Image (cartoon, rainbow, N blue to C red; front, side):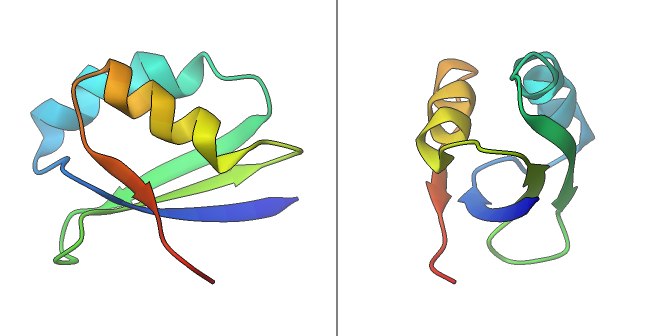
Length: 71
């Protein structure tokens, strides 16, 4: 299992609702959560064999900025 961490533009629970479907539809995602108290609005994704680009693309398709953070 991998844990991927991203900086996002998701700022509130309404934004989370906008991206929820996109994240839930990605195969390989086990669980995800946002930390909106962090200045980078962190998204953490637990996954199996999933490219970070897949998550970035899904959020961009939902109209949000998303960039993987280095380990």
